[in-house]
Amino acid sequence: MDIQEQLRTASPKEVRAAIRNKSFTGGTAGLGGGFIQGNLAILPAEYATDFLRFCQRNPKPCPLVGVSETGDPILHTLGDDVDIRTDVPQYKIFENGNLIEQVDDIQEYWRDDFVSFILGCSFSFEDALMMDGIPLRHIIQNKTVPMYRTNIQAVEAGPFKGEFVVSMRSMTVKDAIRAVEITSRFPEAHGTPIHFGDPSAIGIEDVNVPDFGDPTEIKEGEVPVFWACGVTPQIAIRNAKPSICITHAPGHMLITDIRGAGAGREQFNTNLH
Image (cartoon, rainbow, N blue to C red; front, side):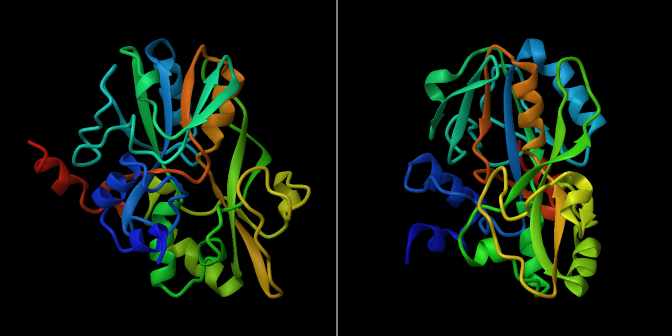
């Protein structure tokens, strides 16, 4: 059994420990079942207010789960000893909007003026879909969910602007309807789909060629179902061209100790001190 299979039944803290000690650096789909996974954006404090506004104006692709104190790498409200410098499997480093490096640890890059934003991820509701009997092909095949740029424009905030990115899961119409019901309980993880059916209606020319992630087969009798995706703020950040920014690599998320569907947050927070 490989490390990813071992971690499928592990607690979020155990998964983070494996990431921190570098024994696991892969994608986090299917891990931390029942707990919120988060997209990451780390920016210098001078950009934080505008980026916060961008998230508030675009809650479907950018559902805020947590924001750090300036310069503090420990995210106290999201888990037991969550260190944002080490607890994401793969990070991307951008300077002036250009990717300069992908790494598995950002301790050497950390600065006292950094603010970390954690945005809910659709991986958080996948466990609920599978528990209801809805198969997810990218997890079955151990792939990264396919993601696409669209023609849907986000609401601008300061220098942050760009198009929505969506993630796609193919399923039968019956399962798609049920998926809408299930994901409505996960507003912190993008909530309900924003589209299903014809990909060209949202500007996707070829659904078999994703912009990010891996292609997955759409079988006869299935429809593609599209959720707003946390890669959207990465596009906005690249357009804003901050002097430096750190994000997660697509599919490589922070797994928090916050239960999905909004359950458990108050209980966790009362046990923090």
